[in-house]
Length: 224
Image 1: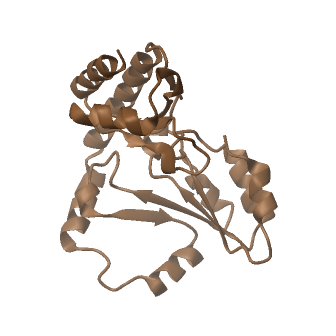
Image 2: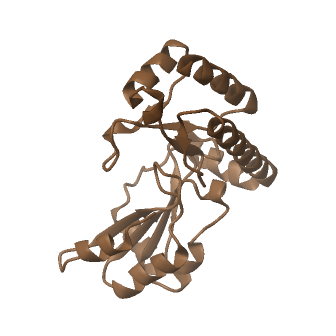
């Protein structure tokens, strides 16, 4: 969970922005809304950027906070649950003043026509969005349940589209396990480069149930 005291301890008169991710990467955990409210309220001159790239999977959003605070800017991507990664498009939610400042610095040609049309039509297709969320959550639950059954793996419950796993008890380091899985066509994220994590953490992402089952099969094969 977020070390709230570390946030307040780090703030100085020079602080201009606080960047928070909820659900967090790579843990998949949420930041409590009251914590966000506390940080924003105690630092009215600091811009609080809340990254909600994975909020659909958590079914929790902090968008109502922009009606309470003028210093909250929520950013989102259309690359995850909406499936438009190749379009390189996202959006922000904030008070009028922040949006106006964004328009002042935004490049004139910051978005292609194709990306705009794709985004607009995706937003209109609520059935697709709901199905994508539902299937993603189903996949996440399946992976969590199955990985939890494997000896030597400690998987964290997640509110995102990925899960963090400690592999230390398997006898592999993250890089070693990632390499063995790669040999069998499976790509996982070696989290050694994440600040605060050692060499025994990997991150896996949701797929279709068919792909999930294949992953679990190969993971068991490698570990055995």
